[in-house]
Amino acid sequence: MKTDEAVYLLRRLGLTLEVDAGRLIVTPANLIDDDTRWLIRKHRDEIIAELEDVPRWAWLVRFDGYALETYHHPDATHADVMRKYPAAQSIVPLPEILWPFDSAKEQAA
Image (cartoon, one colour):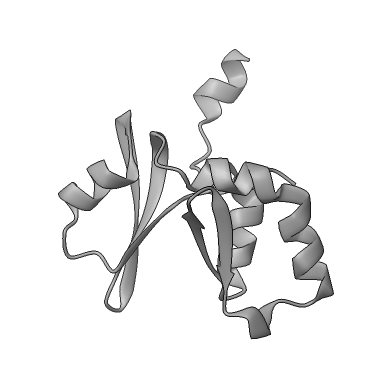
């Protein structure tokens, strides 16, 4: 499992992931079972790196009642996307597995 997939899965489980002074903070604790704890420990360093504000191509922007997949060229940081969508309730990177399929790119490879 790639790191962005792990982050996506943890968020789908209802967990909030934050980095504070280089430490990964996962809440709420009552949602963390043994399997989830193992996943977090296995990918901890990569998750921390993933959550830092690095430019990415695809972001999921959530508003009240709906979500919008956004794609950026050149890549945008979390802060860039926040400036573009100031009314967003949350902005999270889309894992690569959810990126649109580009058949022309696949055929060229």
